[in-house]
Structures are given as structure tokens and as C-alpha cells.
Amino acid sequence: MKVLLIDDDPVTKEIIFSYLETLGNDLCYAKSAEEGLDLLSEEKYDIVICDFILPSMNGIELCKEIRRREEGSLDYTYFIMITHKLSKEVFNNSLSCGADDFIFKPFDENEFISRFRAGVRIIELIKRLKSAKQEIEEISRTDYLTGIYNRRALMEILSAELFRSIREKTELCVAILDLDNFKNVNDVYGHFVGDEVLKGFVEIAKSCIRRYDVIGRFGGEEFIIILPKTTKETGYMVMERIRSTLEDKGIKTSSGTINITVSIGVACICDSKNVDQLIHDADISLYKAKTSGRNRVEVFNDNQNCR
Image 1 (spheres, one colour):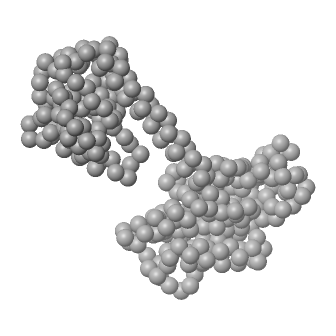
Image 2 (cartoon, rainbow, N blue to C red):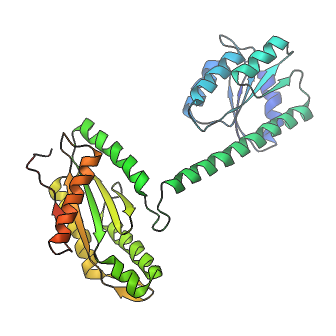
Image 3 (cartoon, helix red, strand yellow):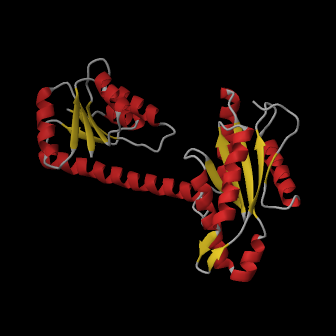
């Protein structure tokens, strides 16, 4: 556990450190609330132990500030207040501001360690809950088969990239990719091999784009690739690389190498575009690629000048 002690009494520091060092904690010390807040700004501490009486700011005010900083965050700091005595008013105010526990002076070592360990258990539980929540959130944004973004996540990312592109006056390309005659693969080889083809295609597409480009499954055998800071011409070349690589290599499956092609529609952002229009334009280009013989890349052109 990372523990921050905030107390202006060096004797108190020595006592508390002697208790906690044997438990294998990562300990840090601050002589004032201001110094403690500076340390909390630099890194995350699991437990803060703070004297109620401090120069310029008492423990209640410090606790309020820590809780204010944690608003809207999954982070939580277990806050233990040190006090000589505890009036009803101090008790109520401390709990109201977010304090978790109290330790009284003079210290009883066994009680101190027991209360500290109670805080450790709570922090460990919070960390597990945080990890589980993040995992659930990740699952909700991921296509279960291919491991890439799903449609929901794609729309969120595209909206953010579009906003950034407009703000920074940079290029943005979006491509919709559709595997040609994919139904035939499922009909001839079965859905298990069809799944292998989808996963194999994703790997080929990933190998042809940059690390910060975004790929996701739009639905069925349709995929979307978001290309930030990419011109229409460059977007075409990237998609042509994916198309030709797939055509040349095919996809290795448990039933052997399957030769399959992809049709791709590309659209570029202009000042008047929004997410729906951008997807619509790419879809129109995809339709043109399909009706023009498949296995080709088409770029949308509405006679407007993209940035």
C-alpha cells in the first residue's frame, strides 16, 4: 500500500512509521496539508493518515479537498484522522467531509495496526471493483469474436475524432470494408471457418494500418477503419494495400487457405460533415465498389474540397 502521513509532529511520524514499515508499506511523509496535497497531485496514495490539527488547514478541510479531487473518478483514498479526543461535533463533521476512520493519541499499537488493516481491506476491495468495472466497460466496447471495437465504440471514437479534426483543422478519412460473397464461405465451409476468415481478415487489416488508426466491426462481415490526419489520397492507398494484401495472400483456416476479396468505400471529412454524413458517404462509395464488380476501393467525391 502507498501510504501518506500528514503530520507536523516528528515524534508522531517516527511512531507511525515504526508501526507500518514492518507491514511492507510504501511510506511517504508531509509536514503540512499543502505539502500533502502537492504529493497527492503528483501520484496516487491508497491511504492518507492525517492529524486533525495542522498549520493553516485542519484535517477536515484537507479531507474535503481530497474528496473534491476524486469527484467523477473511480479512484478512492482511505482517509484516517488522528486526534487526541473526539467531540460529537468533530466526529459528525469528519464523517460528513468523507473521513473513513479515526485513530486516537496516545497510540495503542495493536489498535493502530488493526484499524490500518481494515483500511487496507477496503482499498483492496475498491481496487477489485474498479478492475471489474473497467473489464465490463471494455467488454461492452469490444466485438466478442474479433477482439476489436464494436459498433457502439466505433461511433463514440468517430465522433471524438471528427470533433478533434474540425477543431485542429486536420484531415480525417473513414472507410467501410465489406468482405465479398462472405455468405458463400459460411454455406460451403460452415460458420466456424467463417469466423476464422473474419478474424484472419482483421489481422491482415491491422498489419496495413498505423497503431493509432482505429478498426472495428460494424456488423456481420462489415468493418470500419478510422484514419485520423489522413488525406483522401492517402486513405485510398491504405485501403488499396489492405485489398491487394487480402487478394494476394488469402486467409489461412482450419479448412485450408480461403481466397476472398473485399470491397471498400472511403469518405473524407469536409467542414459541413457530421458522423452520420461521413458514414453515409463511405457507404455510398462501398455500394459503388460492390456494383462496379467488387474487389475494389472507391472514394466518395461530392465536388467539395476537403481540407
